[in-house]
Image 1: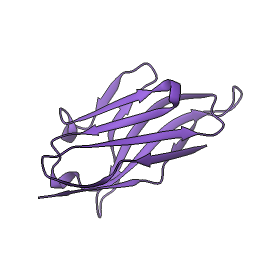
Image 2: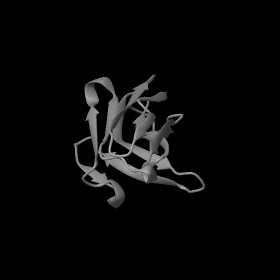
Image 3: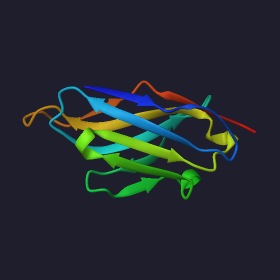
Length: 120
């Protein structure tokens, strides 16, 4: 199983970006998918999560600015980042809880990360 992120980059404060994450490989089912981020010198933190039923939750720092969505048919998850601030600068990681076969236990998978840099 692989998670591959794309869409990071350099943007000015107030701008927008859209991150994408594609899950591929041996996948029987995907439950929750999420985006985390790691700011320089800080621990990785949850940014947004979406369950297979569509319910979402967000970190307080991004509520009203970021939107997580999911395309279950294509095993994709997206993060729309609006009104970006310099403090959003971080490496953003895709995360998914995946069951590879009907008999397998659910496991946690991570992408390699994509850099988001917001200039002031």
